[in-house]
Length: 180
Image 1: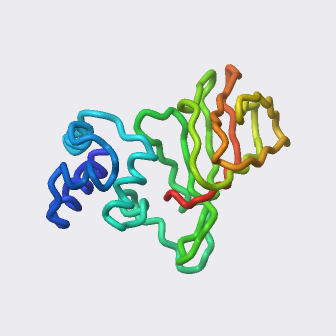
Image 2: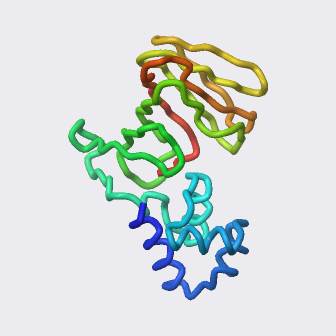
Image 3: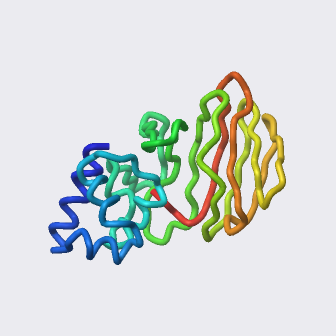
C-alpha cells in the first residue's frame, strides 16, 4: 500500500495540486487525503477510483502493471492482491485494452466476514459462487447462494455481501464499470 500512497502524492505534485485542489476534485476531505498520503489511514477502492479519476489515470496506474497485449491472462500472471481495510483476496482476470467494459475477478472471501457496508454505484454486478456460500443483500432482500448458483443485478441498487461459513468461499465476479 505504501507504493499507492506514494503514487498519489507524486501525481498530486506532478499536477501541481494542493490537497485542497484534490479534495475539490474528489469530494474527499483534505484531512483524509493528507492521512492517505502519509499512510495513516486505509483507502477504500471507491476512494482510490475517485482519486484516479481526478488525475485522469486508470486505477491500474496504482497497481502492478497487468497489461496484456494478447488479451490472454495466464494463471501465473493472475497475481492475488488485497485492498486495505478489506479481508477479501482478489485475482484480476481481464486483459488490458482500450474500451474494456467488464471487470472479471476471482474473489476469495475469508470465513465469517462481511464485505464492506451497503452501498450503490453505476453499473452491473454478476457473481457465480465457485466454492462455499455467500449471502448477497440486494435492495434490502437477502439471497443465500451456494456453489453453482449465480446472481446478476444493477449496481445502483443498495447491496453488500458476506460469507456466513466457517470456511473460505470463492466467487467469480464480473462487474461494470471497470475499476482496475
